[in-house]
Length: 115
Image 1 (cartoon, rainbow, N blue to C red):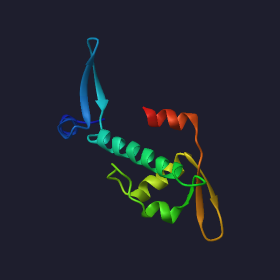
Image 2: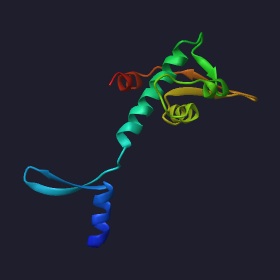
Image 3: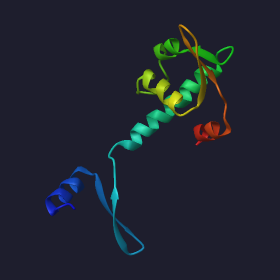
Image 4: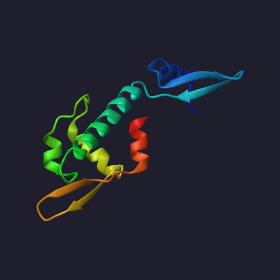
């Protein structure tokens, strides 16, 4: 359990917010600045998908993708590449000396990018 000092510190830092919904008071956990991060992440994903769509066979070497700069995204491109791999937005094949990513157009991904 938390004491009054710890709770007031969390409220002061913006990590704990009091919300009133339909007359009942509840505590909500908050991460300050997460909205800006998510916005940049979505911009980066969309830019990387567009970059892959413009290639001839919709594939690219990982090293080549990491060297590119993404329009409108302030996050490092390496981070976006690993995020796309981790979210299974692309299919990837491992060869002896290089890794290729080929774009896998999924309805759910396109729906997410449109939002």
